[in-house]
Length: 368
Image 1 (cartoon, helix red, strand yellow):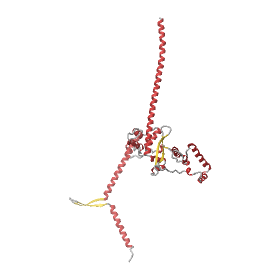
Image 2 (cartoon, rainbow, N blue to C red):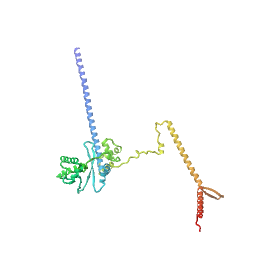
Image 3 (cartoon, helix red, strand yellow):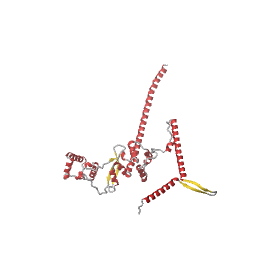
Image 4 (tube, helix red, strand yellow):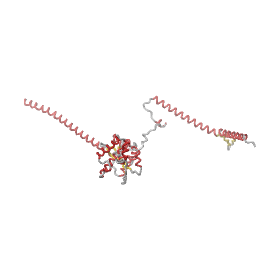
């Protein structure tokens, strides 16, 4: 008996030790499963973000190409109308380039105007190049500007020279120096002797709203996609197989689209359209009956006015021509047509006026 009781006592604590082990094991399994799900969700999220970044970049690429080849003048006209006229001038031969810029994604679009000289070169006049220390014009400039402003300009030129080392045409030695000097002239404002022709950012306000370019830039900045962009999204994201397909994609992006007529409703609707409109559900039964009575009264008054007009027209026609039978026989009738009294009265007045004129002529005729 003692042996059996001791055996039973030894079995009980073994079962108590197994329960917490199973609970810990299930907890570890749940934690591992949650971690795997979180890792999978992050992978899916990263893949989705990568795909959306590729979509936005592809659309922005279409935007840059379309802006450079099709709608350069329209965009530049909204930025600067005076500079837009340079593109239409055949003697200038200007070209506008559009590029991406920015430190974060999505990038923003910048543009710059280039002048093609076809190897002939051009001369840029500025006060910095023309006014030399040996000229008397430098002394006159100092008097006009004032010593303080004149010294500030000299200190600014010295600071730029210490920073870039190539700030004048006399500093050019190699082709790299020439490119650096040309780029510095573009970045320098005109007040400091530069060309002020740097890369400028293309904002959303500078793009016409009627083009899909506006929808693409707005989608890249705000993340909100428009209806017309969503309709053409599938075709625009396809890889162009031919040059014709690529040109067609660019034309879709740069095409000027008018607003649909379904959205534009007239302010004053015709009467038939108003009568066909269903009454609102919040109107009471009494109000609907009142409106129906007013509509019926309006229709009755309209019909009565129409009938009165037709009767007046008939009476006027009958008054103009009246037929009277003079002789009646079984085979034929002799009819006299009386014209309207208004014509006869006019003829009578004309005869009286003519007679009065004859009498007046006789009375005032000179005596022989």
